[in-house]
Length: 334
Ligand SMILES: *Cc1c(COP(=O)(O)O)cnc(C)c1O
Image 1 (cartoon, rainbow, N blue to C red):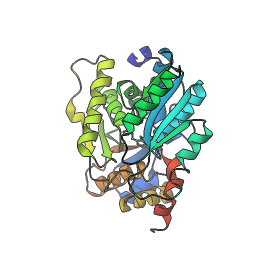
Image 2: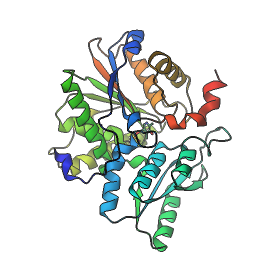
Image 3: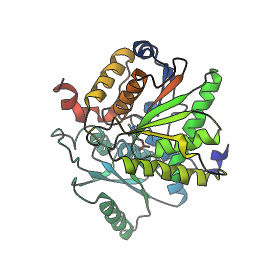
């Protein structure tokens, strides 16, 4: 496998399970639905960033880094997984966390992922919603370098060419699971935020010559940016792997209809998705990412987008560690 030439730190529980969603499939009356449990990657409550970090942190170690700096929103799952991975690998970790521009609960910057990051020993640098977060990231990194640390900076969501390799490997893993069950997967549906998950999947399916539609639901509410981010990862990761002829741009299917008014604003459709998945399957979704993507999947099924004979996989990318930060939205408003 081409992936074997890239250094990789073993951080995730792999393969993640591929499970049927029998009751949901019956309830919705459309294609046969499955869930790929990347919420169960195992590292400090799991999630999709762990696959990317296997390649990103191995690269950082190879370059002699002793300190990791990364950034995200206040309830970033990426930052929590980076803090855990850094702890496991003996690296210092600094997180630049941006306050939400939306009204959130009073304990939004203390509970959920923030609590876990503190337990994991990361150093947190909060910036205001209006601040230039990348500038603060550079400032923190430069300060650490000046103090003699060897710093590796990881971009938002771990979404660059190297991070994309994590989801190339997920695509391969999923195809292998499907083959073992003699299952033909027609589509994978998931949330897209910084683009690495979708970009990596697209490259992986293309590399394997697999005809699997990769349908990403935007959660950022900034359509031109998400499109550019996914395409950047596709280009960068395909280049790293030396894929001849590049990737057919039509392999990237982005849907913009579930983001709601803004990132981290809970929508009614997301709440419906959370309740449906929880009550029919015992499956927990998060309101920022997976519930919006699952709401999108429900809408596609109801619109007759899929054939009854299709096999559709929902990629659960994690995020449930953030649930306590949304207690108000998930209870009071109901
Ligand atoms: C980061 C994240 C995503 C989005 O993945 P990207 O690779 O950033 O597009 C989806 N779901 C959860 C729970 C996440 O934390």
